[in-house]
Amino acid sequence: MHLFLTGPLLWLLAEAALLSPLLSPRRDVNAVCSTLHSKYPGHLAWDPVSLHGLQTLRGTLEYNAALLDYWNVKSASNRPVCAFFPADAEQVSFAVRTLNAHPSVRFALKSGGHNPNLGFSSVDDGVLIAFRPNSRYAVPAPDGRTIDVGAGAKWEDVYSALQPLGKAAVGGRLGDVGVIGLTLGGGLSYLSAQYGFACDNVVSFQCVLADGAIVEASRTSHSDLYFALRGGGNQYAIVTSMTLKAYDVGDQGMVWGGIRTYTADKVRALLAAVSNFTTNGQDPKAAIIPNFAFISAAGLNLPAALVFYFYDGREPPAGLFDEFDAIPHLTSSTAIRSFVSITNQVLGGDMKGLRFQIRENTFPNMPMPTMSSFLHDHFQKVLESTTDEALTDLVDLRLLTFAVQPIPRGIAQASLEMGGGNALGLAPEHGDRVWVEYDIAWASPLCDEKCPDFLRQTADSVLNLHKRNYAGISPTNYIEGDIDFLSYNPIFMNDAMSDQKVLKSYGDEVYQRLKVIHKKYDPEGFFSTRQGGFHFSQ
Image (tube, rainbow, N blue to C red; front, side):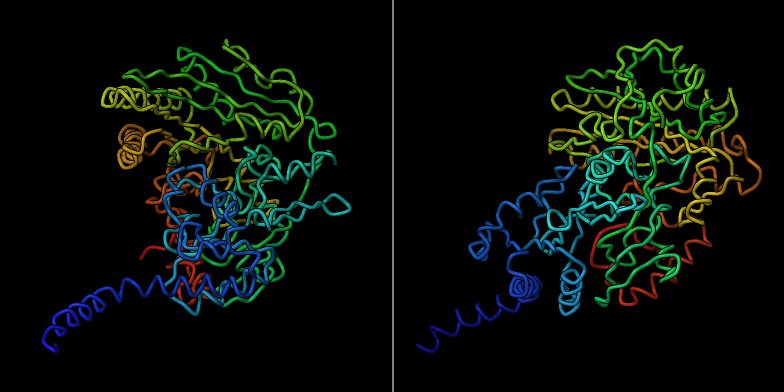
């Protein structure tokens, strides 16, 4: 009898020893979820298909909304053990202290869920701290000069709250974008030439630190943290709310803008107009977002163009957009409209249901005709790549776009004047740049590895094209600075791909400053080792 039991007993013990390292992390994450549930039973939902799911059946809808509401549908493949829905900083503080007691547990912070980089706002087998719906609010101050915004708000919430006052905040150009993530990455706005980046217009951040302490970061309190949070990303603290400046916009909130679409034969003229606008644009109330699209299906690749136009007034002055007006368009929606409606165009950016990835390149805005030549070469290179790629898959639907975003010296000047400098480190004397955002969307999960790789290769190929044929040419309105460095930096965090060295791109002085701030506020690496984001490299 004893001999008969010895074999199975030894096998079970051996199996337990092998499984112990695998089960321990799950025990730890279960412990975190159980502790949060015990403390705040109405604010936590277990994965409804898990053994614990029956405990929080009433939270199933909230869990599924948090799991599925991402711009990149691939993020939903990261399935958290539980989702925690805090309503205030105290609840986030408790979650941080609980996570500190279980150092093997990974977590993610989710505001709007628009960043497509896998793992940046999603987590597999960890704890998802989801700020919607309980921290979704946007409340203007009685005097209308500021607005308090919760970490669960999107820009559509902010603009809708300010529209009746004839005001707006400096924020995302698409409404379906989370407020916190965009601001921590800098935040380019239709209003940036007047008031700088979104991060330059934060009066204060309410934060939870790595040890669970709740602090306010502003110019006068924790000013070093305040600097880091304005463009430096999510490696220093959890932002639970912000107070933002609000500005009068247009004529009692009515502005001019819309989208014009163009056929592919108008691309060369559009690219020249973009370069001239970047160099010579003198009206800070004007903004554009030129997009060049390549639609691939059934082996075909169809190029097209569309331009978002904006003017902070009921109508742009005569002559402002003359070069663009001279280019025949296919369709146009430009009109006098509310500011909030401007940011709700193309569904406010809500492209959910597709798989999605982004990448960014920075280029100097070189003098004409050199810049026009480069942008045309850039377009042709992307066209050739997408045409060749379309022939490799006759079934999937794919959309690749690139947006040439003007960053004239005026934006850098406004940023310094309004915010006193941020982590991006733009300086007016460095001249004019363009930030090119590359996006790829696809339908089939069979392309989940190939499509992001293709985007990376395509963006890198045009970067190499510039370095090979146009390197060393000073940008327009350049006064001083290291041409070799500033020609391709900084990398704009909001549009960057996970493998890009964003923090390094801010320059060594800023990079070292941010590292010191990070070490001060996160000495054990709570934020840098247990969640996604753009981390410090050695």
